[in-house]
Length: 316
Figure 1 (tube, rainbow, N blue to C red):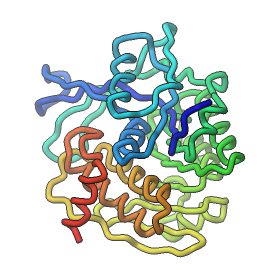
Figure 2: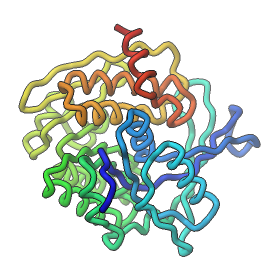
Figure 3: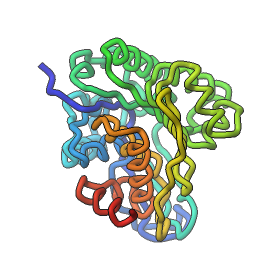
Figure 4: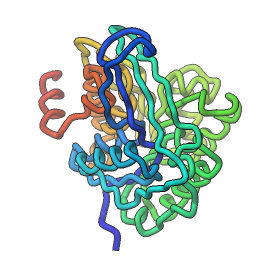
């Protein structure tokens, strides 16, 4: 029998080499290594908040693959459904260090082991042991088989009466064209309960301009809750139970914007799993998003429960 999990996710975790000095990546010689990937950020964040979380993927039988599995185990992420293959290698990326703005990121992931995830790898018992599934469209963009896996996983969890969240995490470079990206993500959105786009993403996906219009677009297509990230201003949410704007938290200094959206997802998902009111879930999302941008790495700002409580009390 599979162990009980609060949440499960799947996708492509990568080995990240981030620059220790500013400047063009081809001129940098000193890098540090860390675990990276949108879904692994969310799994890490949920685990740090004491929500048992599992991760499903394929890794290369190589040093990067074993590094990733080890890094996940250190974060108490369940890795029982991670498989290794000698056929393909583990994906990796390099990230620049910047004083202001977004860092430059270069990926080495084509034909990676994770992109070969398919329905053959779907373990019904493992997914059924989890109460919630988190998905990003990055996983669906990796390959046809990964897209099939995403659709199947979402439909399976819905049939079992579990909740499903979707973060569009737009990555145009992973898709053949904008129309394919928009149509695929909007199709995935009809299979989720909680949809978590940024305002810019919502505009691209719907052609609409206001948070209210974007939320209504997805609510009309079967989504239960839409939460739209508005950057420093906070977020807007709407469901059948109500709607509202929730202010963001004050950020003293933006160190690294990567991972802010994943931190927001951690906050919303964890609070919803704890049955908190939606406005409080969005407030927690804003808090963890703020903590994320004040820290250098993708996951450095993801708090423990004590760190989160301390930050939110300071900001009241």
